[in-house]
Image (cartoon, rainbow, N blue to C red; front, side, top):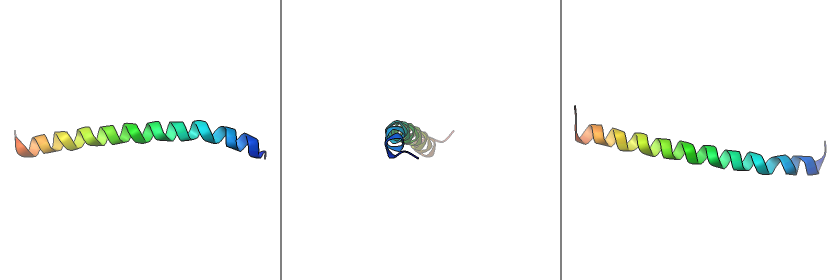
Length: 43
């Protein structure tokens, strides 16, 4: 196993992980806003 290869593969994985976390955070925020909208305005 090469250390340089691992370091090279770690950067893209970190970028993908950050993008996935950001996407999940945005989706959770939208879901929380929709839930609050349902609570305040039922029906």
